[in-house]
Length: 199
Image 1 (spheres, rainbow, N blue to C red):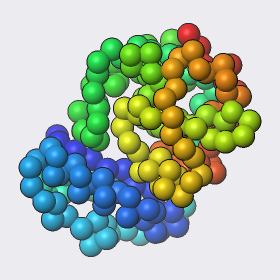
Image 2: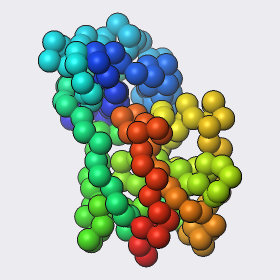
Image 3: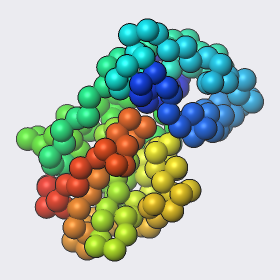
Image 4: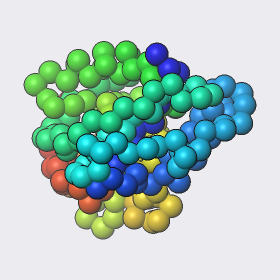
């Protein structure tokens, strides 16, 4: 298994938001492997014929070189509710291929569709996506994400969302939330009532 991976949205045969994936890959290689990244995603991604129509997920496993590229059809998961789960001091600052601990947290979802991970009383992410909250005026994302996603970074840079410390007690101040990641775009994600977050 490779140390790191990226998941990239391929829509109608075109990779989306490569700038943000490249930036994260560059940071990851430098921090985790101690060297400058030489992988250029724009040169490495060759879209197979079957992925040239519709929406596909491209997974790239890598260390200092790419070890595997896989394409699979993507469908937006229907998330209706989240179960809050305390992760204590768990760290997942980079997109490591080893997600065993995250999978164990996911198993605690009980009857819910996914988990909302809480660290030191701070809201972080779901098991696979960043989260944004609507307070009636603006969209806010926690400033304590477990993983700084590429969609989150792009929305922050464009001013669509802003970040702020969000504690579990602050959830009552919001009306809705959305889950976002590279494949689950901000506009694609439905509003979910804040009451769908279960203690």
